Length: 253
Image (cartoon, rainbow, N blue to C red; front, side, top):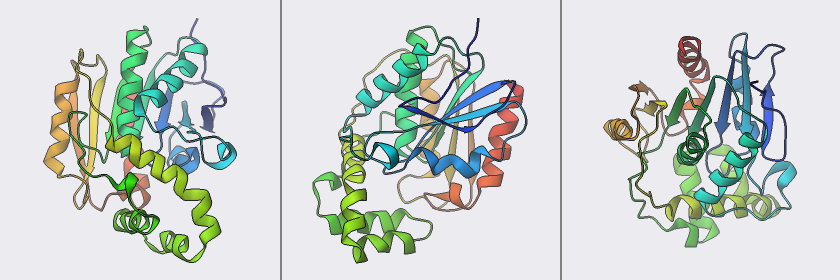
């Protein structure tokens, strides 16, 4: 009998439904908490349950040591999903670093027999992309400068310069996530059986829109690329558009 994903150490419910027709498990971008997808979650229609992974080192897991390896994050999240039983109509959504964590989690889930309907990957090149930056070894000032470069609104990031106590709380998780991304190396394997939908924005400084097409090589199912206007965190400004687009896919699954 199929189960329903529930709150746990690693999973946080953002949108619940008495009758779950589809589960969407989200994976936060680097430095982000589970609540990064709170607004997106509320935009979906009836029957869609939305959860988000909660990585260590942020919010109620602030006291825990952040994990600096994408494979380990995927291992732990996949274990939690599998421990809750087989889930019908499960899709995964990840933005930026979260796209790579979602991909690796999908690989693990499929190997263990959990079917994935669709993997939505947003704002991140395909897994074979080699990240050459080493910002996880940089100074706090350089890390903050890169966060400002990517932010839709750099004003909140500037608080990290002016509030050292806030930076002391936030930057360890950010640095760990940069390390996870910059040290990730794709291990060849069978393509996913899940469909892949790659979402990309027109002005993302971390990738070119056409790079999203390289995700096609990682699925034996259908592939689609969708382009939205905006920068790296276009989701913050296009949340209704993205929810409508993803929701249409979930209804068709």
